[in-house]
Length: 169
Length: 77
Image 1: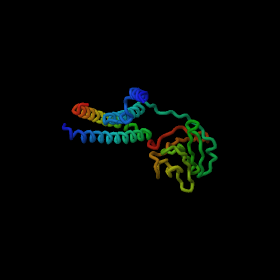
Image 2 (image 1 turned 30 degrees about the vertical axis):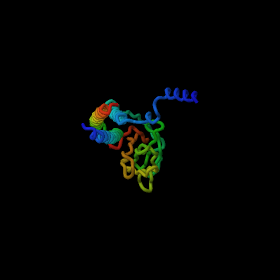
Image 3 (image 1 turned 90 degrees about the vertical axis):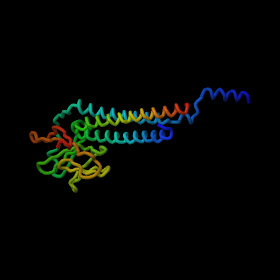
Image 4 (image 1 turned 120 degrees about the vertical axis):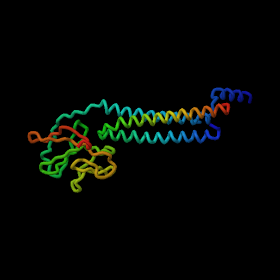
């Protein structure tokens, strides 16, 4: 028994802090955690400010949209612009009117599609609808219009020459 | 400050810090949303307001620390 007592005493020397004491959080510690979180928020704001001031306007290369002129009126197709893996939705609204938008929903980046019957661009994930005329939000949770692709006609081909956000249009 | 007023003061200060933090979170979300929508003019005002909120949180933290320390001193801890 005496040996056990000695072992127990040695164990207590090794771990002098009780588990409950270790888990106890003082008001000061809690306040410090909150203030550090506040600091992180402030740093995030500074990061946005730096990006706004130092960020350069993106440059877009012109790219021919393959098969665009063969698209039937009311039809739509998907092409990559400005880079591969950046899907955009091209819609032929009339014989001479084409519009194109980023295919990523501005809510959570689900792929949107054109509904000819309802004449609107629809996001199936959270039922967000966009106008096919200018990409503005008609309904649902998307916070911003769809980024629009600037199109030009060159030598009978349809060419994407740039992107603009809905707020610029 | 008397002993019986310290606890409500501490709790009030902590509650106020939490409230300021919630406002700061909303502000960051709104500024990010504006930035993504290419409204860069909101970034400066957002950063200034966030700095004010952070300063207020820091001041409240100092207040909590001071009251807590005084309370411990009075109790001989």
